[in-house]
Length: 465
Image 1 (cartoon, one colour):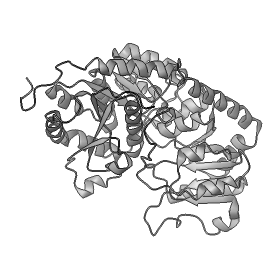
Image 2 (tube, helix red, strand yellow; image 1 turned 180 degrees about the horizontal axis):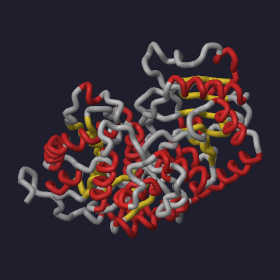
Image 3 (spheres, helix red, strand yellow; image 1 turned 180 degrees about the vertical axis):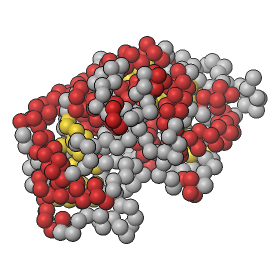
Image 4 (cartoon, helix red, strand yellow; image 1 turned 45 degrees about the vertical axis):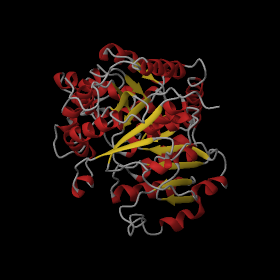
């Protein structure tokens, strides 16, 4: 039976990027299933589909983006624009919401950590603000130490020092530190510092991770941030009462599931490099022939550059050479794919959602990180959790073939699969009644409810003082 409704609302706002939308909607489902009314605030750009979430209310606000700005391939620049332009539109929308007597009272605001502008909005309305970090704790620790890393000379990154150890953050090397292509070379540094500073000013931080996976980073961050910390992940594995609607911005090709049904257990390599990472035509060709030469069955998500150019980057004769051993789709229902018994490994860009989903299903990884936190995640996958291998350097068909053999055929792959299954078990235990994530969720619920009946924001129509 559904838990008793608590008579209070929580507003949640995601950053409008695929890797950020999914976890905040997952958190919203978790809170809804624990009795809270849910309001999803969102920009007009990449807005979620309200019909997929009939149990939520939605609060759109203007992002003031032009068409060219919204189509940028620079996610950091896009996020900075949203932080600059959205404070006033969100304040106006929230003010109207707070004055609506038909709604359950709003007791708390939960913001994506990337949207640091929400601090000023919540301060002006005297609304308690929690922050969701959609990435891992280990990568956020790196971001939080950017000033120290610059002071010690690791930043800006120098390619000639790539193999040098970062002694303050073992086991990372300089080449594993986050980087991102942007119009402004200082943009990532400034963004990371601002994100960390604004998070420290919040009432608490929610993590889509679990203690047993990232205990060292979580303990260090608790000390450095000085605010309540709630690791309640993995979100997508929580038993929720709400419908599990897809938050994907693309429609998945369901044909891959019956194709997987025809394959042997642990025989298929699933290949997907996420929703943003750009892969050059040369890399696609090298990936293709590496897959072909491996002789392993594969399911490959190949995102189209345009509707007319979907399969054009594939080399001539590739599809004929692999025959029925390979299946190529534009987008896949990833959690279904990773949980399928035919899938034996995952070639991934190591975005946090993908990394965590693979861990939860006990699927070993071939790591090909592209930017930002992905490099940190990949290093932890290969060297700390030991549930994957990294592709070295540039994508080259011979190295691709070797990596596939290591993870799918050789003894190293058997060890890696055993480690992955151990972590899968821990991810399951943490969500059980007395598990670490369940205890953290209970503490988070108590924290949110502690705001109830307080005068945390001004009477509707008044200016915050």
